[in-house]
Length: 342
Image (tube, rainbow, N blue to C red; front, side, top):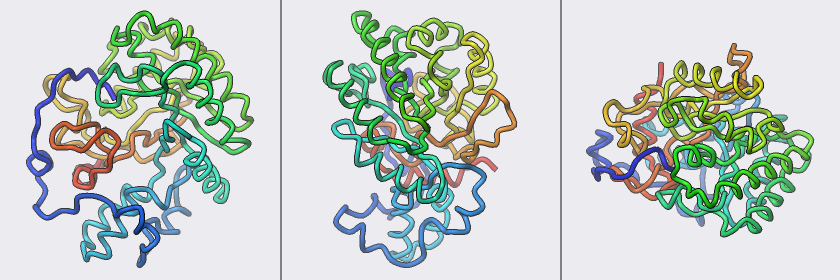
């Protein structure tokens, strides 16, 4: 996902993270997922004491990595990684057929009386051709995909973060002007379609304060995209801005869009953003740490939840020795744990 980076410096994963050699290169192949044995990666007592209403995926990449490392005797690393595995993280459904991923998440959430956190990320002309480029091939395909997304939720409880970056890319000019009207229309339709589901909350993405410095530049674009019919907006998705900076930004923006509430991504902001050139700060930056654990008990009447929308340990893209965008990178995940917010 685009975070103002045009170029990047390639470093090895070991140099970036300062981890010892010999670390596992990733999770087990799909054919071995059912062979996991030993101590559960997500402990029942952790779920019972959770300070949130969100679903924890017992088969997340982090949870499977915990089990693999237990089997390999890497008990210290496995125990450390529980700090990720035992937290709820957003599900990013596939761009071809979102239904299986959503069905799994909503069924698991329903069994536990919790809410699934989902991300709709498939808008045409996504990410301006950069690390997460792609998305639906055209508007018609997107409407079909979004409809399948909503249908798969059904009557389940779900919180949907709608199209990270889509509005900020209009504001910063990265998305070509000829696509703006179509994007506004698709986002507005998506909000309307998702809100037909009786137990869905929708938060339209609004970037982060390190990207669009003046929150008021987002006001009209959000309104044109139908923010009035959404439950609010999301901030800091896949970024590293601090809680205080992001919440202040959110309050400023909320005042310009009818007092709408917001949620923020705190998955990797425990150390704040990488110092220096912000154009080089968003893609697998070294030294970052886990932020505030997910919770809907924020103490702020406008802030509905701290969420882990970007799944900690998923790469931002092939920079600084990382794998492709969205691919699991266990060494980076361990780095986030070791640098976690106290």
